[in-house]
Length: 78
Image (cartoon, rainbow, N blue to C red):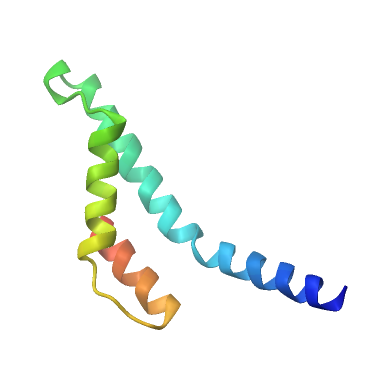
């Protein structure tokens, strides 16, 4: 039971670490989809968004330290 509690706490802490990247990804998503309000020419699909997001993950600098890696991903999404 103690092991389960420690695992749960660890998962919760890691999930909190990713919230900044998730927020930046959401901003990117709404920005891309909001462009269609300017002109129909700027209408993007979910697949286009996923391509941009996955490209940011693939091309951002790698790091073994989670906080540094998340900063690199956030910077790439900006």
